[in-house]
Amino acid sequence: MFELDGRVALVTGAGQGVGAGIAAVLAAQGAAVAVNDLHPDRAEATVAAVIAAGGKAVAVPFDVTDYDAVVAGVAAARSALGPVDILVPNAGIPSVGMPQLPFVDTNPELWHRFIDLNLYGVLHCIHAALPSMCELGWGRVVVISSEAGRHGLDIKVALYGAGKAGAVGLLRHVAMEVAPQGVTMNALSLGLMGNVSSEWAAKVARSVPRRRLGTPTDIGAAVAFLASDAADWITGQVLPVNGGSYS
Image (cartoon, rainbow, N blue to C red; front, top):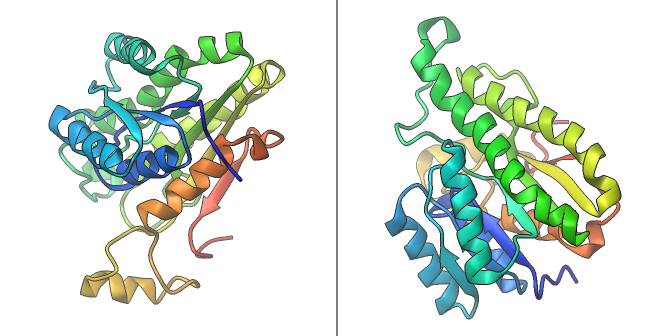
């Protein structure tokens, strides 16, 4: 079940972490994966891991905040693997990291970093990949969002949350436009993720009903479901993947 044989997936921000996990799971389910990352060496490392596990993948490094680069990257993926029919906009953390600051202590330069990546990056990727999906009559878009975009949290990540919430608002509307063409668009709202071996993570994990933090494989499995034919009647939705942390 959830086989993806013959499908071509593009996963952004897949050079490490959650994105690399998503790429690995999609490849294991039979998809050929175009691995995007801002840093070519990270994209190549994920590709090497996928191929070593018996999957098919190519690296397509580009900056998702640069529309022309995105268009060229989608074209490169198509040239190497075929038309992209599964798009996973995952890139979400700026290269400078995610400083946790009260909103009143931030500035417009920092605003742009988060909104450009989490909203405009998603806009660019969807706009570039969607036409061929509609033309072919089949497509899946799975946006990687966050509980920070679904709930107000007192952890000083308002800019990140705003970008994620904006992307979810976009997909809900566009999902209605393209549903008749056989394209579904959904989002995953991620809860607490982390390395459970650290002391901090072990402490935080105790606050999660499932008593552990999320892993890249957890997210990859949810993406594989939404990307499969089994999820054909699900669109315009946000699926919380959070260990039971929030309603």
